[in-house]
Image (cartoon, rainbow, N blue to C red; front, side, top):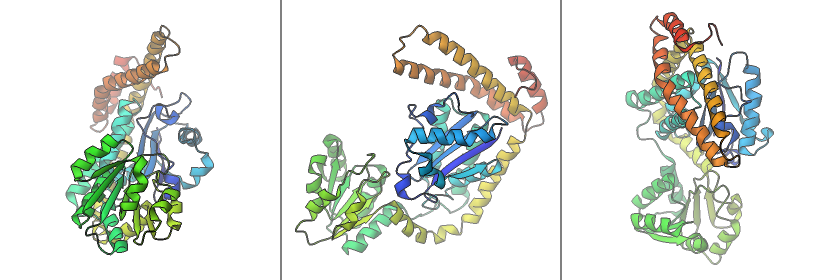
Length: 425
């Protein structure tokens, strides 16, 4: 059962490519997420953040050659991109490289901000979503448990996560650098994501006094404005907000720029003070053409990365210890994977359960309206989740036995109990 990973991150792709790679693992309308019948995968987990898109998968033995082109094709369909647009940015990990890479990711060793804590939660969330969708199995479960252990240990046993310079703190430094002082400055927030909240908190702590919340939903903006002691504006008043602001934090989840160059030019007409945009959204919220407007300063995630790289020297001293932890957990996973005897049994047990699920689901949907796609999708999701939950405890017990010398005995018993064919692959 080869373990494979395809990865695109901030290290391999510029923000202009990364902003097109958002792929929610909880979006079953995407072909790669829902799992096509032609996909030669036993298990698959998608890790999608603003700085990375990674697919961790287990392919049946002998299907390695077919794995990558099929996944690339489904990825292109899911992202509505041509493979040529993202393939040059792909990094491939195979076999032992996969566990080593994922453990490093969870430990914060591969993050834009060295040692940052958010990635550990994102790794755990990616696994949980895939498990709920019925896309995990014994190998990905053990792989992600190893990575989560590595992440927790790195933060508790080393100082790699202590006092990291954050995107928000860099944003504050940049704003102060351009405006000279943050005292009595007006901050406009376009959208109100978690990163925007952090940036606003930091800016206000450094003297910014006036806050404008520009949100598509005025009611939602009003709630945040009350929380922050500011004023809410609807998107129809975006131009007014820009004209009043000294600093703009852009952090919406829109799939395209929401701050256009023409709106900014109008806001800058007759103005004699600079306007600083800090775009921490992906896809980007601010049209890159804004950089060409006199008096306007635009910083996006690539600009922030350059400054973050210079801030990490202290935490870099902790890298060897965190690396050792990641390697230790990766080796534990590889040793588990080499347990051998029980892995084919677990895989065959899951294949048998999947075959039963498909037969029973097909029998059920024959009596349902053919055009009720939403009901069919819900039943598919429910049946996958049910099988996954029913098999979780037995497969967990079998995994435990693979490392204590009882693998052969438990493999024989499992085959007998569940009617599995001896030597089935």
